[in-house]
Length: 392
Length: 248
Image (cartoon, rainbow over all chains, first blue to last red; front, side, top):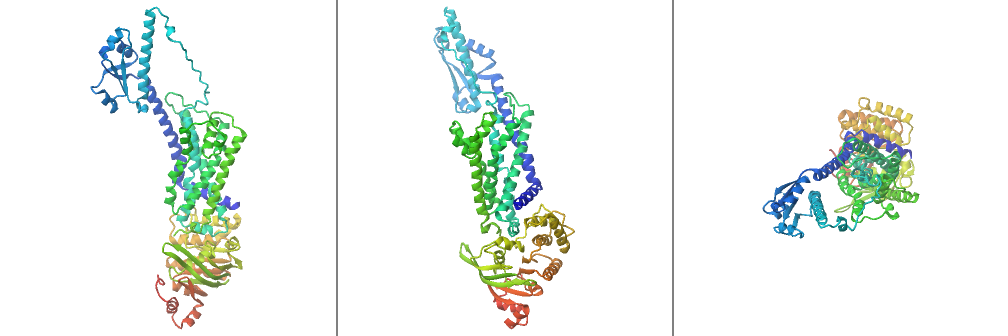
C-alpha cells in the first residue's frame, strides 16, 4: 500500500512539473471548451433572432399580380424584390432561401373568390440554413390567408368562429429545470469525456514514456510489485483527470454565468448538492479511463503508438449519445449498467433534478467499478509481460 | 553471493528462435568483484536481466544469498542493487529526489533515505548537481545518479551492466574507485563489460561469455595459464575465438 502511495505521489509531482502537460490540462482545455460551446450557442441564438426579426428580402415573381398581398407583406417587415429569371437555379445554387411565385391566374381567382394560387419554391434538404426563413414566410402567408378568409365570412354575414371548429391550446409540462438549454445539454458529454481521457497525458507518459526514457527497467528491479506500481500510476492518472475536470467545470460555470449570451437564456443553475452527485456518478468513468489508458500505454510498443489509440478512445463515450439520438428510449435499469450510457442518463437526471433510486445508483456505480476492475486486471497482465520493460 | 546454474533463454524472432543464453553457470562471491566479459551480443545483458528477475529463464537456476529467484523474486530484488543497461532517470526530478524515490520503493524511512542519499552524493562526488533537475545532465552525471539510486538501500549484492559505458576517463577512474570501495565493504559486485582492459584492471574473477556460453573463467593469472598466453589480451581472443566486438 505504501508503494502505491509512493508511486502515486511521484507521478503527480512529475506531472505537475511538466509545464506543457499542466498548461493543456488546466489552462487550455478548461478555457477552450466552455468558450467553444458558448460561442456556438451565442452564434446560434443570434442567427435565429436575426432571421425572425430582421427585414427579410423576399424575391417574388409576378408581384404586380397581387398588390394587396405585397402591401400586407411589406407591413410585416418584408422587403419585396423581383425574382431572378431562373427561380429553380437560384434556389439550387443557394443564392436564395425561398422564392414566392404568384400564379398568372391569381387576380382572376381572387376576384372570383376562388382559392388564388401562390407557390413557395425552396429546398427542404437544407433546414439549417433556410428552415427559419421558409417557416417565417409560410407563417405570414397562412396569417394573410386566414385574415382575408375571416373578412370574407364577415362580408357574407357569417360569424368567423364558424370556420374555426377547433381551438387548440398548448400546455407544456416541462419544468424550467427539465427544459434546459444548449449549455446544459453539453454537460454530460463534457463530464464523461474529461473524466474518461483527462489523464491521457499522464497515463501515456508514466508507462510508455517511462519505458521510452529507459527508467522502467530500474523501477521494475526494485522490490515493489508490479501491481503496486501499476495501481499508483492508475490512481495518479485518475487524480489528474479529476483535477482537470473540476477546473474545466468551474471555468464552464463562470463562462455561462457571466457571459452575456444572446437571447434564449443560457442560465446555469447547478446547486452544490447536484455537483457532488455529478462527481459520484462520474467516478467509475474516471477509474475506467485511467485503467484503460494505462493498459493501452503498456500494450503499445511506443509513445507514438499509444497516442495513436486516443482518437478511438475519444469516440467511445460518444457511442451511447449517438445510440440515444438514433433511438431515443425511456430510461430503463439495464441502461444504467452500460458504461457511458448509464453515466449519461444519471447526469441528465441529476441536472433535471429528478429523484434517483438507491438501486439505480447501486447498478450504475457497481457495474462501472466492476468493469474498471476488469480493465485493471488486464492492465496488470500486460504489466507482467517480459517485453514491457525492454525498450531497445 | 550470486550463484547461477545452467541458465538458458531463447527468444522468438522473425527468422526463427534465437538462443541468447545457452547454459551459463558461474558464482560471484562476497567481497570480490566479478567481471562478466564478452563481446557485444554475447548474452551478458540477458543473463543479468534474468538475475535481477526482469526476465524468466527457460531453464536453470539463480540463487542470490541462497534465495531462489524463481521462488521469491521480491526477496531477491530486496537484496540487489541494480544498474541496468537502461539507466534512465526522471528528468523532472532532481538527483536527490530520484534517489529518495527508490529509497521509498525499498520501504526505507525518510530519515534513513535522507542520510543515505547524502552519503552517496558525497561518495560519488555529486554535490554540484544533486539538487538540480536531471534534465540536461551529462552522461556521467546521469550514470552516477542511476548508481546512487541503485545503492540507496545498501544492498549486499551489486549488479552493474556496463557501468563505464559512455563515461570520460576521469569519471571512469572515479567509478573504479567506487567499485573497489564496495568490495572493501564486503559486498558482492558483479559487473559486465566488453572492454578487456577494464575487466583486467578491476576484477578478482573474470567470467568470459561468448555466444551465450561461458568459455572460460578464473582470475587473470588462471586465464593466462589456461590459454598458455602470456598476454591477457591474446588469452581473451583465444578463448572467444575471435577479436570481433572486443575492443570497441
